[in-house]
Image (tube, rainbow, N blue to C red; front, side):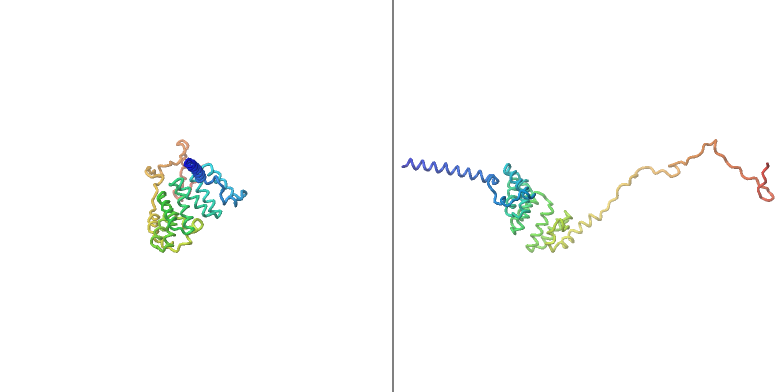
Length: 248
């Protein structure tokens, strides 16, 4: 009986180890098993085809941070927000210094109201990419939403000073979500005005060269001395001061 119990225990251990190995095998590469959203993909649609292409590539190389980040963007466009967030998380897990995925992770977390996680992702972005204007602007939006006006204005002013294109609603539609941009512009204006007012002079092209008087610069052409003819003055009659008749 004791030997039977030992045998059963050993068999259970072996089966358990095999199950754990099988589970680890699947969790190491989640693209080896079917993914639920793939049933909704249409291979004739360019976006869906790109999603399937990235899945196939990640099946072969599941630690490619850039591919995870790209797939996350495609899934967000397709409306699979949770799966997009998972891909951005996998991107930063594959490469902790991959700041584009940190920023995208902040954007998608902020969109669903996860302020703490979004702020952490934006801070990681700014740590890895100091002066990232979009991350500064997004943090300004969160500060404004939290009622921290002064902090929001400071963030906006920094972001606008770095990247003027953030003021273009076509490039940054979120600018319409803020009511503090005019105050951020006033704060950023002194520095911008000082830089723009510094108008410097370029060196003239001929600076340092000896200027030559016009008379010396290009002497006028003269006829040869032997061909110069000086006309004789007319002969006049002293009494009448009229020209004297010319002898035949």
